[in-house]
Length: 127
Length: 127
Image (cartoon, rainbow over all chains, first blue to last red; front, side, top):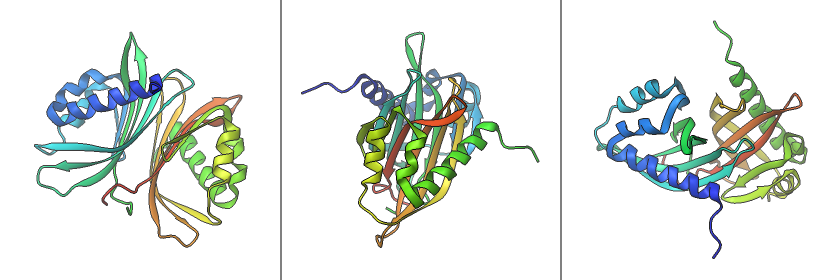
């Protein structure tokens, strides 16, 4: 059976790592961002590792669990990897909610970091 | 009140144009893609303008209407624009369905083209 394309391996590896970290100890997500990273979280923009980490660590819940329904990965013309994730999440004792997230990954000094991150809850969709 | 950032103007203008074209005559979408463009449509990959337009033109419905719930835009480190769209669509007499789509836009010879496009129906999410 043929191997997955390299961008799919990189994207899927990143996605698995990201949600594992997010769900266990999201302070550790700092490693994935740089000063040039942008996050849009439910329509609000955050620029740079510090602002992003402040937003993520201050999200108002104790426990969170993500479950990925589908993920797609593509290579970009500038040798980046773009990953789109559809899934569900459960926060504390709240009902399960759908979400989607997008990551643009860039290789800097042999390490894949996240330069662009967009997150939205799927509050407006029928399913 | 300040102007929107340029990437938001370009992104939202592209998004508006894309869905307008899609809903009226999607065979015209060829102009926004190039030979290096990739589309992932519900998990299937299509490479290059011709394959993409063939896929979109042969989607099995007569009428379609997209409605955008939310859109986010960011500049990327390589001077591209990343756009994420959440919305709903109605094809023929089918029930309304949620969808999300992402576009990576690149400026080539003064025109913004779509190099990466990913579409998924929101069939798995609670709302």
